Structure formats: C-alpha cells, structure tokens
Picture 1 (cartoon, one colour):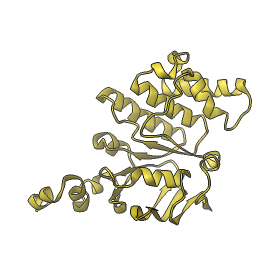
Picture 2: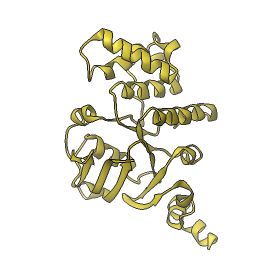
Picture 3: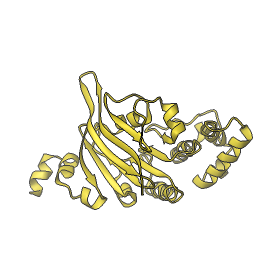
Picture 4: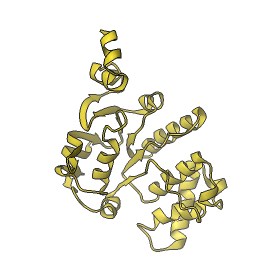
Length: 244
C-alpha cells in the first residue's frame, strides 16, 4: 500500500491554549485508522486542521505527497478528503435524496447526474426506501447515514468520520461497523474518531492515541489496548497504580 496522508508535527494553538502539539502520523491507502483519546484530547481539532476548517499553527499536512496545509475546506474536499461532524448537520427541509445530492454537486452541475449518484449511494448505505423523507424527520441512525452518504457523494479518497457511532444502540453500531468495512472494500481509506472501543478495535488496522493534545501511542489495536500510557490516560493514575 502507498502512503495517502501524512501529518507532520501539527500544532494548533488558540491563544495560550495548545489543542494539538507536535502530532505526526501517516495513513496508507485502503487503511482504516482510528484516532482515539479522552475528551479534550484534541481529536476534532486535528480533524479540522486536516480538513481545512482552520490552519494549523505549525506543521504540515500532505495528501498524495502534496502539501495541502492551510488550504480552504472546499479545495481539500475537491482534492478527495471529506469529513463528517460530531453533531449531525442534516438539512432538515430537504429530503434524504436532496441531502445527498448536495454533496454530488461538488463534481457535477447536472441535477440528473446528481440524482443518479445519490441513488447509487443510497443503495450502498441502506437509505433507498427513505429517499423522500425530510431530513428533520429522520431517526438518529438515519441522520448519521445521510451524513456519511452526503460525504460519499463528494467522491472522497479519504473519508473522515467524527464519532459516527455516538448515540446508537448495539445493532446500529454493528451496522455502521459493517458499512465502514464495506467502504474500505470499495477502495476508500478511513480516518475515524470514536469513543466506543468495542466497535473501533475490530475494524481498525491501526490506532493513534491522543492525550492532552499530544500523540502518546500508535500501533495495531492489540498493542494499543495494552499500552500502559494509554490505560493511564483512559482510566486514571489510580487504576494504573493498582495495575502495577
């Protein structure tokens, strides 16, 4: 596999607050890499720096070997990096089909072609029977599916999912896990922020762990879950002391 994304020494500051500090890692094509860490670890901030929502204070982001640091979000999306959000942003007054079509318009000005693309993606994501339902009337799982589907309509190479399983029941979580695996089989690369460890560990090729803005571990899931610094970050000093 060849390298798709490279993060080099990313630091992001908001005034005196350091949200990310000297974070580096790579993602190869067709990998599923998950970004985990306690609340406030800087995961979404890093997502935003990669996706162009604001530039990093220092460091570089490379996509296919090209420096994309600080490019605006629409340019980065056009290059092939798309992200979803922690809080779903379904367009309430549009149907499921129309929501997905908004993503397709990144690459076509034809409504007919956008509808064709939306139809293919609805079939892939299990939304075909809901195409005419308004976004505001959907369940949380279907809103999350629409958010993923709209992102897929932009034709990404790298799909970045920010807590796409939060608030779901066990059956729904399993459905999203299977969708992620299917997307990888279809040639996508995924970077996922998630807190539900029993969901993310089985589908991830590698895990990157942040704590207080810094990377504290990286590796295959079985190594990461047994890393003492990771255990300490998630469960606290007391647990770590008792474990020793």
